[in-house]
Length: 164
Length: 203
Image (tube, rainbow over all chains, first blue to last red; front, side, top):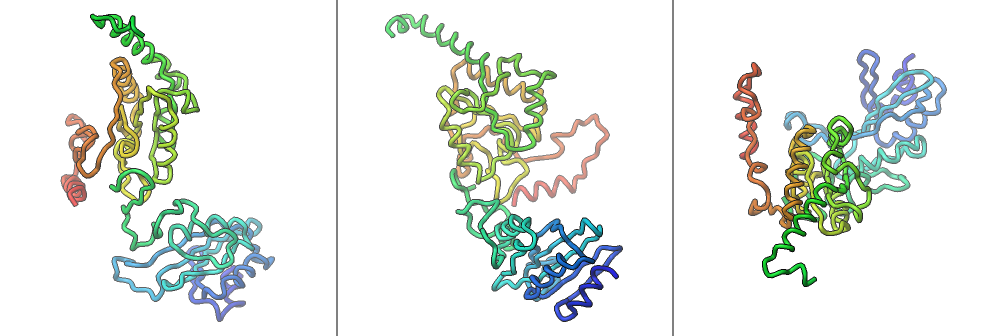
């Protein structure tokens, strides 16, 4: 039984979509169930995802040149790894443009702290319950979120010096 | 001092020359290393190329004790106020070397984070473009800096992006692949590729 099958069996209501390709398993869930599913991933002995390898986000605005329209704008992507079982899982959570917010995972994986700050800094997605959600790469005076697709790629906001 | 200002000006100019000569062979540099150019800076400084031959072998990691600010690597807008502070803390006379194309013009970066040339923030005396510059380029730049120090020249102007003044014209030319290709080599340049680069630059 693969980790994906195990989760599907347990959370059949919360799973939006699954995908598996040559052992790479992807799971898309409803944002409301994130904390429950994450707790299950970490604390089930057969899964034991004790390592959060990566946490990032995708902005689907103008996706594929605007040819593909999605009903949500962002997706937060988590990559989990189990050191014990040597298996991996990619977990995706769709996030709405109007209220971009998901639950924090800092309580389960302390390493999520800076990742979530980076996603907040670059994409403007809030993490509910994060202990210290502030910018990590850009300065506090920076307006907007640089990796959003509607941010002009070369719009500079100098602290000193001329605008160019 | 009255004895320095003789009616002929002879003694004054000789002392100036002696000071310039002494300064150019005792360059205490402050390496402001932020990116990959630091590797090339280190290889220039180390025994194979050996900048100590030019009296510049002893980096000081305090701006108060250094004469030349080597800005080595990309400067982001977050780092820009720090660089300005370091420059302000240095005692006169001071010189600035822009090491690598990122510090000269921003290089290939054209994004939200990068300062498009440190000469928008602090005056630059010597530009050493290259990504990264080869040690020979660096030593060439260092010798040009020595000439400047000998003459007692210092840059005081900043680059103004609106009027496009205060930066060498060579650094403001458009980029073309052909000018970097040796005609004797067999490497072929796709004309379409070059046309696209020109198109992007004119936009």
